[in-house]
Amino acid sequence: METGERIHDYATINLRFKGYLFDFKTQTQAIAAMRDVLFAYMCLLSEAGIVPGAITPSSVLLGIQGAAERPRGVLVDFDISTSTNHAVRKSPGTLKMYMSAADIARCDPHNHPSPPHDEMDDLESAHYVLSEIMFGFKGPRRKLVLAKRRPRMLVDWERETYSNAYNSKLAYFSDEDLDIEDVPAYWNPACKTLLCGLHRLLTPVVRKKRRLAKRYCEEKRKALECLLEGSSGLYQSALELFDKALEELKYAGVA
Image 1 (cartoon, rainbow, N blue to C red):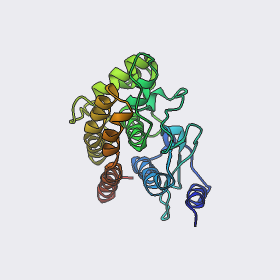
Image 2 (image 1 turned 135 degrees about the vertical axis):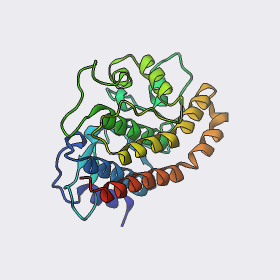
Image 3 (image 1 turned 120 degrees about the horizontal axis):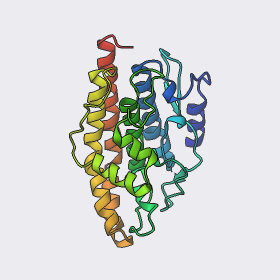
Image 4 (image 1 turned 180 degrees about the horizontal axis):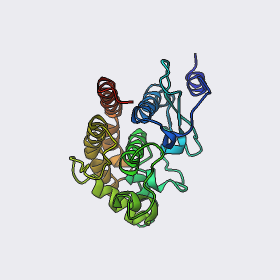
């Protein structure tokens, strides 16, 4: 079967979806959906040489809760997707909240040219989605909406200028040890451990990409390519974090 057909089959399996990611009914449902989206990305999209351009809550559809078969989450909306063979970063539209730091840097014409959008940008994007879910929801359909109730970083990513959002995201990755004090009590420790683990994986990548961007040119492209050689291992490590969290949730009897 051709890779394109496999992607189509994966995305159209059990078209009885139960809303978008923010419609989650349990924390297990939300975590499982994100896990299966990353699995599809690693096994299908990367093989086809496709990067979505950004992962957002509205691009993740929820599968049937408790279904034995996968996917429990499906990635849709490829309007700003691109090929890994094209050294380009497409127009971000209104996705500032979920854009990688490198993508946001591109929006400032005074910055150095950003390296091409790649699969690590999309993993960073997925981390922002997970961060918003866990910092921004105190339960199913209980999103913290008012700015005074939402953590400052979420407000910065969503409402501030590109420059301020960029600085906020760099500050978010200034330390590998993520401060989760503001994560609502609804979220099980297994979910918090997952968020911290994913943050720890991505912190050195975001920092290194920032350094590369400061002196990015074709001659420096090899340094970025060496960094990207570890992307499959990074995704595998991320999947293991999700699987561990889901196993702990199941063991604790958390829905």
